[in-house]
Length: 438
Ligand SMILES: Nc1ncnc2c1ncn2[C@@H]1O[C@H](COP(=O)(O)OP(=O)(O)OP(=O)(O)O)[C@@H](O)[C@H]1O
Ligand SMILES: [Mg+2]
Image 1: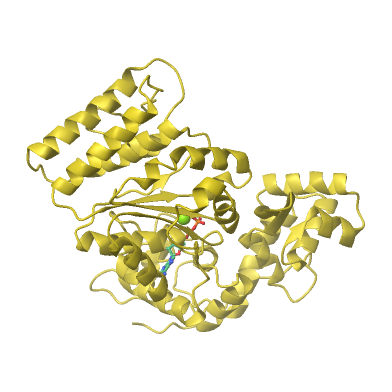
Image 2: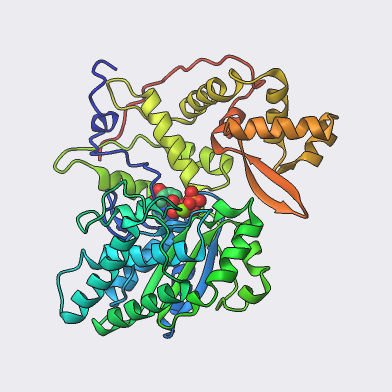
C-alpha cells in the first residue's frame, strides 16, 4: 500500500472493519446491535424463561464462534428494556475458580454495573458500601489465590486498579451467599424486575471434567437464589458434562439450548447490514463482498459466522492496495489458500503436514481414526496431535468414552480452496473489478 497508515476500510468508505469478530455487547458496541439477524425462536425461548418470574438456570451451547455470546447479550439488551438488571459484562469463568471465587466475581460484575447507574436512594448507597467493603477487604489480603481481574478490573475508580490482585479472604461461603441474597434484595428494592447473570466460556473446562463437576456441585445452592436467572454458555461437551452431574442436572429449567449456524440468507443479510452501518457518514461506500464469495465461505466453514467474518476481513485486507477491490470467488480462494499455506504448511514437518491433510478430509478425527487411516502407531499420533494443537492447527471438539475428538481450525480449511494438490504454488491475479457504489 502506498501509505500503510491509511485504513484499508477508509478506501471502501468505511469507518472500521465491518467484519470484526467481536461479539455484540450489552454496552459499548462499535457495531450496533441492529445488525443482529435471525435466532427468533432462540430469543423467544430465552425471553420466556426470563419472563417466568422466580429465577432460572439454563445452558446455551454450540460450536466455537457460532454466536452464543451474542445471542445471550441480545436477549439481555431486550431484557434491559423490560426493567431487568443485568451486569453489562458477561462473566468469564476461570478454570481454577473455587466456589467463593465464583460468588465474588458475580458480586463484582454486579457492583461494576451498579456504580455506573445514576446515584439512587439510601438502599443503593447501602449496598454499594457493603460490596465496596468486601472488595477492599480482598484487596488488603496478602498473597493467595487471585480472582478474575477482567471483571474486577472494570471497577476502576471505585478503589480497585486494573492490575489489582484480589486475594482469598477469610470470609466464608455462607457469608458470601448471604451477601449475594442481600444484594439481590436491594436491586429488587431499587425497582428492578429480576436479575440475569451471564457466565461465558465454560468450554474452558472441557478437558477438566472433574473441575467442572466440583464447581457446579459447589455453586448448586447459590444458583438457586430466587429472582436470579443464571445463563451458562459452553460447548456441546460442556453441556453434556453439566447435565451428567446428578445433583446438578435437575436444577436446570429446560434442556440445554443448542445453537445451529445461521442460514446462508441470514449471513448475507448480516454482512450487508454490517457494511452499511460501518459507512462513513455522508460518503459513498463500496461493499467489497460478492455473493459468490460468501457462498464459498459458507460451505467451507459450515455456516460458522465467526470464521466467515474472519476470512472476509483477512482476504480484503490482503488484496486491497490503493483502490477498492471486489472480492470475487477466484480472488478469495487464491488469497486465502496462499495465507493458509504460508501459516500452516510451510512451517510444519512432512509428517505433521500428512496428518493435518488427513484431518482436513475427516469431518472429526481422533487418535483412532488417524492411526487407522495413516497406518501409524497410536503413541506417535498422540504426539502429532499435541504438536498440531500447540500450533493451533486443530482444536478439541468433544470427549466421548475418554476418546478425544478434534477438528481442524477454520483457517486451516482455506487449504481446501485449491483446485490442485495442497502443496502447489498459486498465483494471486488480483482482478480489480469495477465496484458498484452505494
Ligand atoms: N445472530 C447474529 N447476527 C449477526 N451477527 C452475529 C450473530 N451471531 C453472532 N454474530 C457475530 O458473529 C461473531 C461470533 O459471535 P459470538 O462471539 O457471539 O460467538 P460465540 O459462539 O460466543 O463464540 P465463542 O465460541 O468463541 O465464544 C461476532 O462477530 C458476532 O457479532
Ligand atoms: Mg462467546
